[in-house]
Image (cartoon, rainbow, N blue to C red; front, side, top):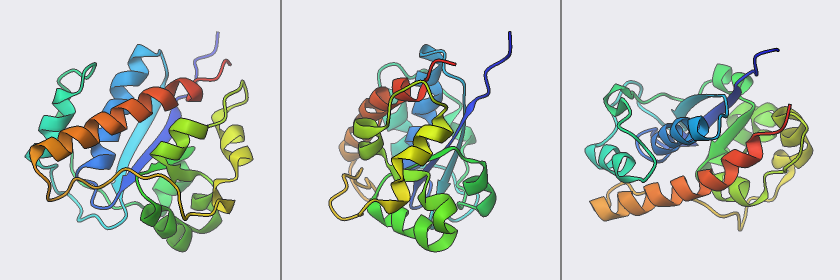
Length: 184
């Protein structure tokens, strides 16, 4: 029996301090429930390297049902790199501006594997083909950006805004992750 290769996922927001961090922790927590092997990198399009997540982000992560007490204190912000883009099989962005950034800075390689979380949750192709093949077939880089659903940035909002953002991300990942798990 061969060991399944993990699905390599990058979660992407602006500062890598809230949305992408939430998504990264949730993917790891929910994937274990699905017996889905994943590796996750969280990154930002305009991150200041090495910054911790905010207390509101940490509180919101820990408030979501089905998420244990992850080592949330260990997170440090990270700017998306060419290596991250090459490494990833799918890049989960939070808003259209992140897609624009990836298309501008990382070209077709990044554009063809990057889409917003709400769109991925609703439309990621199911099937038995490997994730890389389904991502390629989806032709994300050819999608028109206007009108694509997004996850709003909670930055500057009260704790309730962070909690609502975390719940939205968690719900959409609960839709998406089973679709990533193709029979081998």
